[in-house]
Length: 260
Image 1 (spheres, rainbow, N blue to C red):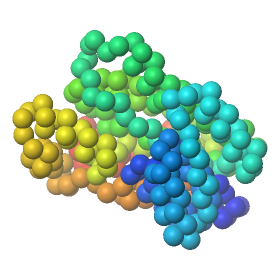
Image 2: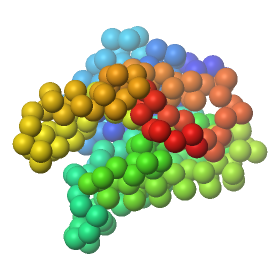
Image 3: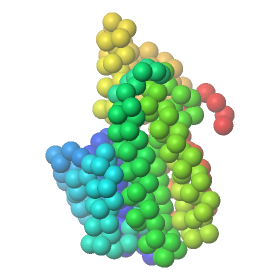
Image 4: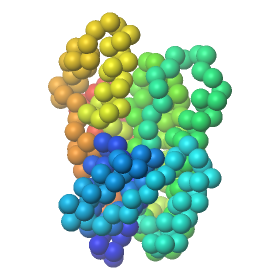
């Protein structure tokens, strides 16, 4: 089977990482289902995919509504057939201290950042297993390796995602289906800009100063580009990555200091 016969779902496809990923996969021949809560954003991604010569089906999907995610994913499968690749990207919660987080925030974010991707993946997985080929690629955060101060909710839930993906990979490898996690460092997206703005307000400085200081902590000396994240996802989505599973792969410019 060639990529032109394969379909890929990209969650949070309206954002920087998701949009870049959808376009990159399309350039390699995948038919794209671009999902995002923001209709205008997902339409922009769809337009970009088509401009790149690809086919795109934009869908408005609210990851915080787990039952609706399940229904929408099933509808995609019923309409388009087997999905060969799912790229699980979710938005991040607002910065938070380590204690005093309202229970409702935990519940909402757990649904949006974890249960939603579990449900979507479980809907597409039977088709992958049947065709003996599939790719489950999940984006998390550098916080799963080195927890980030003031991002308690993100650190905790994304670490849960990491455990889920690794455990899943062991049960589906014999079926020709891989499950891997991509860890972006500081990539130049709206999310990083938001975090820089919050930090600037807390420190009483400017966003430019925060970004400049942040660049100094990254060996590459800059924020990454979403296209650099998309290149790794595209590789993991291809035939050449068939023996790579259960892995955590970084796109961080050397930011994370640990070896493992």
